[in-house]
Length: 196
Image (cartoon, rainbow, N blue to C red; front, side, top):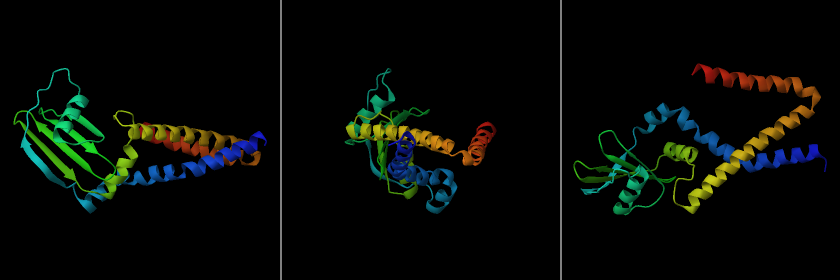
């Protein structure tokens, strides 16, 4: 097999392999771009109270939001991927999520209260959750596997781009049209990058 044919095969099979991922990131971008439409259609996210109870947690000054969030979730009897932060008013917010649902746990140190609320399923949240999920900050083999898969997809996309550019350059009669397409893409990207 010659090198040009090998490049074509790599490009073809990478494109087929990456097709679900392109579809995922393409479709899941729609709610980001059309947030107003989804807000008008579905309204604000509806949260139902799971519990609101007395709670007190002694938080060490050097404790990170992740450590505090992990302890709050443990005390609330919840598990799963989460993010945590401390709001300006002193309360602690812990957001536990998966692709299908979310639970928001808020600790109010001044009132010594712990509030847990669940959000029901919505297509726009489902899609943006797919799009934005990534990283290796969760303590889960499955979460790490997702992060590795996303990294491999990123490498695959870069390789797919490189093989596409190589194939374009090999067809002399199409170099002009290809340069026009590539230049148009770079120019439109640069305009938005500098203007926005």
